[in-house]
Length: 276
Picture: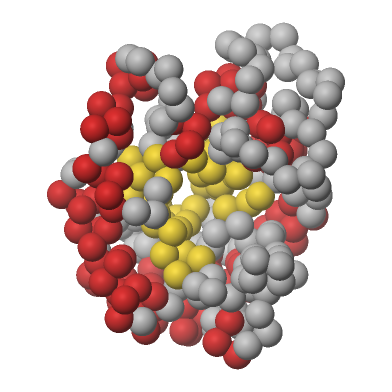
């Protein structure tokens, strides 16, 4: 039986009003919970501190070290996370500023997907500075148009293969793919697996569509398509949906014995309905 781990979730889904006693609830839960947040100020938040969490997810532009401001930002965040005794899931992502507010990915040379050699060099620099990181995700939302991997599962697999070769004998774990629950997910995953070396056993899923449309379709598809663990590396309710986001008015029921709690778009529902 496959298990889905609610490992790292959107901060908005955790810090919702009315979660009194949340820290104790999370501490006693059988699944692991963390927060995905880009600002180091979170570590000073009494609300976050009260949760007693030990895991965070952090997005790092693959070429961050080329920009002094980004270099200082990443170094500062990682230092704060280390001081707070956090297990950081580091996820590499596209060069900052390449995806426009109009929803278009830039064709500039600087925004192109890096070669395997360039990616390897950037990773080695990061790993040398932060050797205590225990889990890496090769690339964020590889099947979304905001990433240079959108139309190339082969490129995304190259990045996984690089991290796999660098992991050595258990130095760190590698998440093969961070997927968004969109229509191309299953097709993309099948192509990705053809190019990925070895047999990846750790995967990430951003199931915003399932949670906000009150369904489990894509989460179940992910579980059926890949072996091993699937972590919900991003999930949660969206505060305000754009008109283009068609929300179902008739939620799909969970199968008997697989759902717990309310069907509201919260982390507990996502975890309860997703266990395979």
